[in-house]
Length: 288
Image (cartoon, rainbow, N blue to C red; front, side):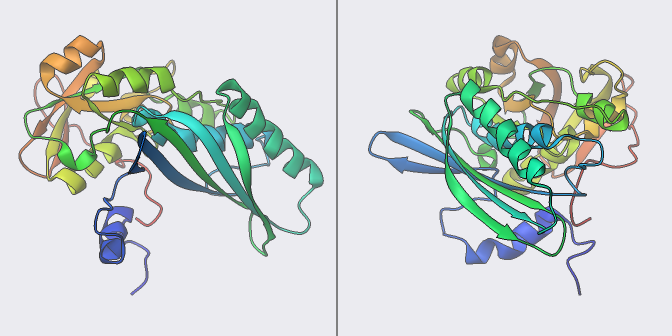
């Protein structure tokens, strides 16, 4: 049996016995130290899967890759501190690609006084691979997805689907991580995640980690210009955050209310009449 068709969440469950006892299957690790909490996350970006240099500039790829990696820190309310960048590239890769990649990462890093502290370079026979580890700090322990409770509400920070629109048009889409917003929402006591794999897929993560399902009101999910409802529900690689918490906190936060958590593991999307909305997919999964 191969990993194909198993699904990413199932694979994570399979490797869970080999992880530290305190480790959860969450988007970032939260580690206590003497002054608060360190939040650490790692992401990988593969040429031909996550980016295409046939129509994207290497500088855009660098910016976008670091922005997506930093989304996990923003979701936990952490202030970014440093990043490590490891790049494996074919020997025939143009030097301009490497220069542009680091120029893009550096441009975003400077915006948040983030230090690119090091990393590694390697050759590879296949397509290029970028591996990023990012770390930040927060004074308060953020809620883990596993702490979500049935009956809580679901809210998002802004319009979704813009990444899908840009991808179809082969247009650059430079994300900016929502650090200020993430900090504010965590301080309110909400549990947040970045929408890296699509809104529906993010709710499936809550189901896997907390045992709670959700009902999303498709017509209430805000859409970016040119985005369809399906784009807004399933497009990943968004800077926007999805947060869950008691309804009064979601309303107080100013988030767009888009659904509710349920006491089963099912993730459903319904229209204004309560009828189910059928989606072609639920979001991106490397191993589906």
